[in-house]
Length: 77
View (cartoon, rainbow, N blue to C red):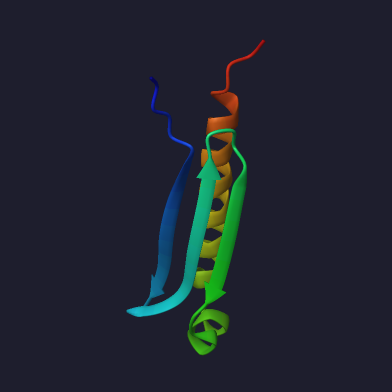
C-alpha cells in the first residue's frame, strides 16, 4: 500500500496596517493543477494602498511556483 498526497490546500491573508485586505485560498494537486480564489475583504484599504495589490501579485507568483514545482516533480516517461 502507498499513501500519496493528492492535493494541498493553502489559506493566505494579506494584512496592511493591521487591516485584512485580501484573503486567498489555493488548492494545488500533485500534478501541478491549481485552483485559486482571491477575496477582497476591505475595498477601501485594498484600493487605497498599492502595497496590497503588489502583495497579491507576489502571492499569485508564489502559488504558481508551487504548482510548477509539483508539475516538474512528476516522473517522466
